[in-house]
Length: 83
Image 1 (cartoon, rainbow, N blue to C red):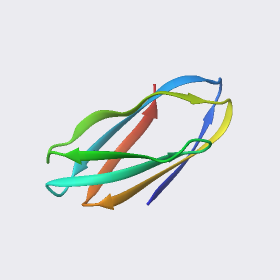
Image 2: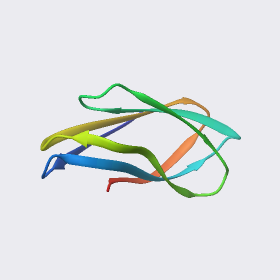
Image 3: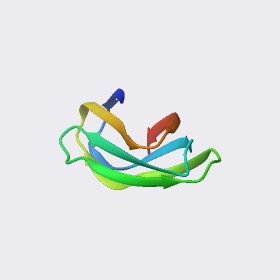
Image 4: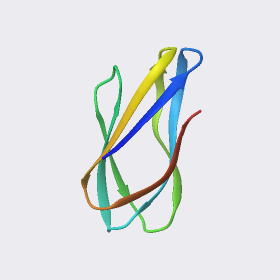
């Protein structure tokens, strides 16, 4: 489980982009962003990849907590960003 805290300087719509590598043929991750229902994403491939996991999510100004859980398989996370 990965916990990440961020500060949003202005409330608006964002995409959540990550750089990751799947260490098994397939993986399933859950992404929880404070104030929103958890979302699941299926991942595959063995190379490092950049992906937009969530698009157009509304984030309010202030502190934001993000939790990423690996539900199945293995995933290495390099970074995440809201764009």
